[in-house]
Length: 145
Image 1 (tube, rainbow, N blue to C red):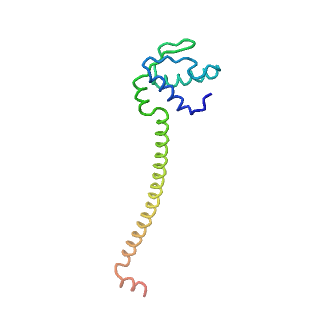
Image 2 (cartoon, rainbow, N blue to C red):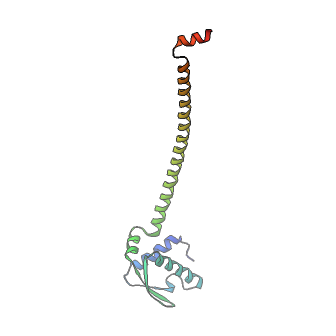
């Protein structure tokens, strides 16, 4: 089997089909040695067809006629599966960073809420204090009795 990553193999098939509008892909496009590899090739072709990047017109035991769809051409020009993997990895990294920032902000909101509550209780206690002792002289009178 090919030691290239699957994304690169899919890009290679797209590149092969992109070279001609009427691309005939033989079963020995990859390797004619084993049935296992032909099955693997069919799975690559099925993936491209399922994703809508190729259209298979004629299938028999040994070859097919495959056309690249408009979506396939645009996808191939944008860098194909390899480029998509890079974009997906970048998106995953950005999402992880955004999640971390969100969690940090949530923690700040919790601490801020507790701090605001404590300040509120202190203001309430101060208001009650002033209710009973509106001036310093009233406090001194109350303490001296």
